Length: 330
Image 1 (cartoon, rainbow, N blue to C red):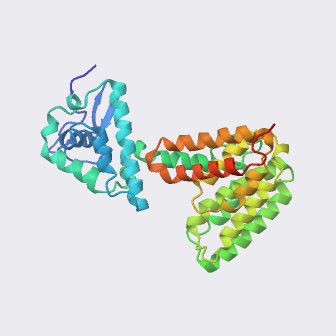
Image 2: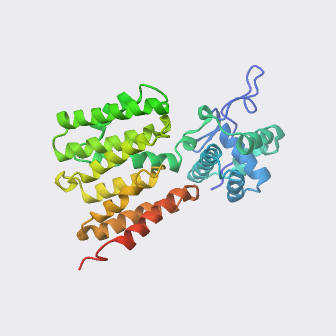
Image 3: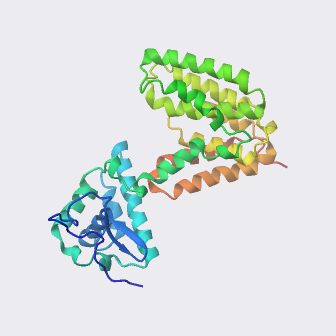
């Protein structure tokens, strides 16, 4: 059903032009239970004027020259996510883009602002809509770090603070200071292990929390010497050595949690141990690991912008399928 355009929610008051002034987060209009912001207006005016109503052409324009630098890639992903969210809201409300925009379609001031805001400028963090913030990359990365924790017998959340309290003392650690930080974290880990993590389920939670805390800290340290990476490697070895079958964790949860983490950590920190991890998988879990890795890989295929992570998942799948011994349980 196509519904005609109604008047914007905001009206020009006391000489203030509510359509042309203000930021993208401010409301523009409301139709059929859906609210639309100025960002939505800019997208629709740009879509209809410059791309003949083609969402695909608009998406292609958004990613032009936005494939190398991390900052512009993040900007593209944020803007494309808002575009997809806007399409969904229009469909849910049964609205036609041109009818919603109405006479504002020919407003050159709005079109100029739309081109600037969407095609030329990077959107500032404070100007992002919820859809711009909650990109697939952000959601899946957060899940890879902590998304399975509530399914652990003891949640790693219980121990995460012991690492964060130490790491958060500074916003950045120089190479020399990183040595001291690494030694303090090792001492904390040893102390907490002795005092609070005597059982395998608690140890699983403690060392899993440590892996995420150390990965979070990688952007805060100058690890030119490799000492922090070595610390991560030591914690990872201890984690994989824990007899997880005795903790009560479901095999599917254990495998999915670690393999998602391995795909999304971007420093190659798990590379040296992944073969050992695969080597410990019992034959009765071969089919389960196939399923988990295929799930991880196929989910990433849904998102063009996550090609790097998709390649990583595919490499893990190939490594697992070509290296397992015996090939299949009898």
